[in-house]
Image (cartoon, rainbow, N blue to C red; front, side, top):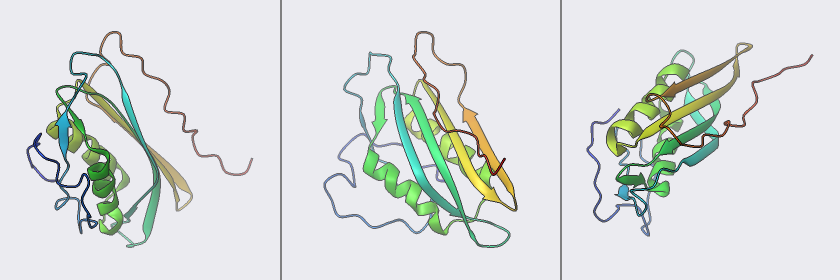
Length: 156
């Protein structure tokens, strides 16, 4: 993942024609000042059609990602997040590395009060894999609803 520090000046993607980055390392996430910086609240992004590539077979892996965060001084610009997540389409990585890597990058760059990510991966080889990561304890007083994604159930 990239070590790009966040910028809070003019976003690169907002209102501009943008192309999908060829890799997550090339993706630039835009951050803007949080207009409610003194308020404790939660933001949720859901990416129900996330894809990356299996590092063993090169075949596509599919997941439903849910990213929850309590903003600090900045918020992530959603178009840049969409392009960042889309850049994984040609990226090989194990489910655990991809999920935790996305959470780590967002947390390190955006510096939210709290962040969690749930990666609900569809079965490959008959085994569904769900990966969860959070930055630390939930801030006192923050309402955190269930992510609402059921565990995978096959027949039976």
